[in-house]
Length: 253
Ligand code: 13P
Image (cartoon, rainbow, N blue to C red; front, side, top):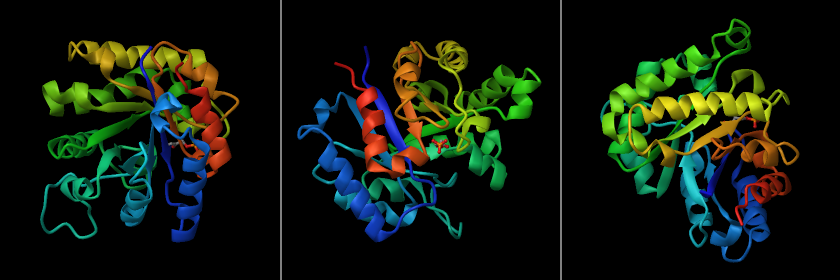
């Protein structure tokens, strides 16, 4: 079985002190040789703390991630952070198209695809988020929505598509305590896998993560599904004991 990828998304939380305490507690709770944690681990932190967390993670196997990246390579784009800048701080992953950015910053499928392209061009792995709202699910549009969102990224990225990570995050499950059932999640993951398979012979190696109220109690069953390759964890990644329990559930012996 392939190694799971467990990524924490801190969203807009943290402080210098809180970050240091959280990372210290996480590293203390992982096996000494953290490759024997049995899964890959990443922390996606606010841009302003990338340098701090990069230094805190330096002697560990835990990877660093950003929560967004510019669709441009360089230039007069006030407030933006380029993929090359992320790379300067040893950032391995960048979340793109999180539903909070699609909703509050009006990010379109085409923009998200450009962000994925910029990340890949600088050697940063985009974690492309897709997911339907409750209204869309109730209208029977779940498949159409996630396929449309992923299609834009496939279209813009061509054969590089096997280098991305996908995260299925049903919007109605984010921060609500409502989780997709393992069957509901698997059904969508299988749709995404088939869509990737039509675009690349390497679809099996693309990690498709589940995100949305993942916790220690539901992680094991979700992660047991054949097409769920890991998790993108919000709230529970801010508490070391909770994130460590989820990581333990992801362990592949
Ligand atoms: P929660 O785990 O807090 O529901 O957040 C999920 C998420 O949005 C991760 O990107």
